Length: 191
Image (cartoon, rainbow, N blue to C red; front, side, top):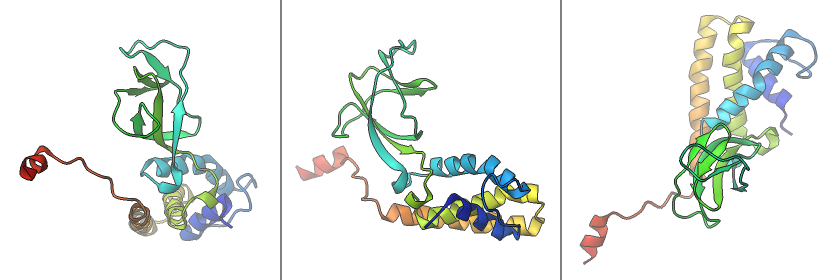
């Protein structure tokens, strides 16, 4: 069973550093992990369109009035990390004009549906290759504070980039290819 501590200890092991028993066990490495883990995880989640982190929602309208030229403000979900797509229908077809601002989505659509990357805090919902890429990214972040040598940092950078690339590649192969709209030349040739 995967755990945050397992991911953190994998990162520490890559540095040859002491393992921790918990994010709050009082050790220097635990304090470092507690300080960085959530931010690094969320940054990694934002870096791609990870299938395990994709979700959809119908947004509710805010009572506030936008000053952006749109009619409504729609509230972002609390677990929102990154937008993927916005629609004005639950069939997820077509497109709608919008802006994302601090207080939410600004749009004139009567209803707003989104596909987005959500915050995933349970490592068991993450794929194994994402967890490995996350451990490499954590080890790179830890390396300065733990005072790893330049050679080790360079190796972690290289191996981490490979881990992220492999994780994104594996994740992408699980998707159905997006259907691209046919261009006008296809219609002309069909005549």
